[in-house]
Image 1 (cartoon, rainbow, N blue to C red):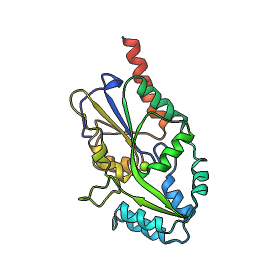
Image 2: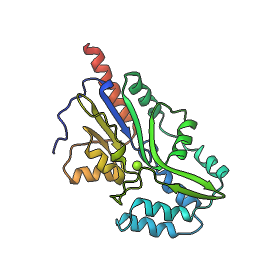
Image 3: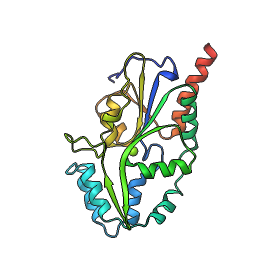
Length: 232
Ligand SMILES: [Mg+2]
């Protein structure tokens, strides 16, 4: 397999750690679930299939799918408040921040939803870049401040929001699962992947580490940190 970087991790403080949200921090795709749960018809299925066949990009798909969603703000907040994220997510953030690493979440979901879920799960200490959304009655109105106008693929171009200070001994670690993670993950020194992202890296013969849950990411940094501490 082609190795993306020979850079070893010298210390956790040199790490920029970037997490995707849906299916990475959560164990299901929250946005897909919102669309299927609150849609008034099945038009979203056609759009999903067109997106899967790459006939339309994520922005067109999401705009179309959200046109069919009807939900009050109160009902949606009630739904979001039931979503649990892995206990290991706060643990890994605490560990990384304790040792001075920078943590980002990059998502093609919507920032107000993600903030609500993570606040309810008592997770803090990260920088978040995601799409935006507002309520108009019982309709959801999206906006896409991080779109790359020269590329139709993703609603949020995550590559543009990768940490910019990449000089010197900084190590970029990317953790994700989906289509929108492919471009930014290719810029990373170490990639943890599952799902579509793992299949793409496998097919492209790029180096990556397979993961299933955030617990494995926590154990990776923890064992690294423990062995470093023992050696010092
Ligand atoms: Mg994802």
